[in-house]
Length: 82
Image 1 (spheres, rainbow, N blue to C red):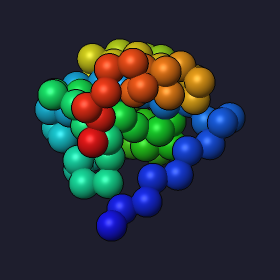
Image 2 (image 1 turned 120 degrees about the vertical axis):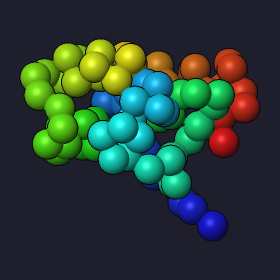
Image 3 (image 1 turned 90 degrees about the vertical axis):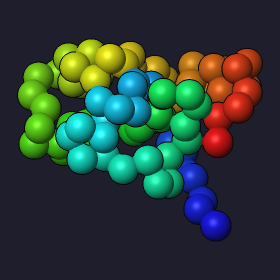
Image 4 (image 1 turned 30 degrees about the vertical axis):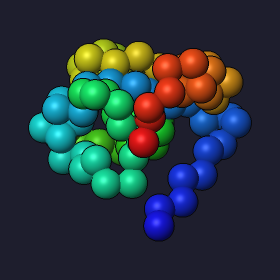
């Protein structure tokens, strides 16, 4: 069983799972939906494969940055995030 812990202050990124895999992020332990993966800001800011601001790093993976509240609304609205 995988426990997913969220922080209200942390930023979250929804991006293309295939692009995340290209920089070494494995899908295990992440929420996935179709070809999208949910990451936290630490995974992008500590990645040596990416440079720039958090928004620039997210954009490089075909993604966008969200607050905890926003990403929770997306998950609840869309459903199917496993």
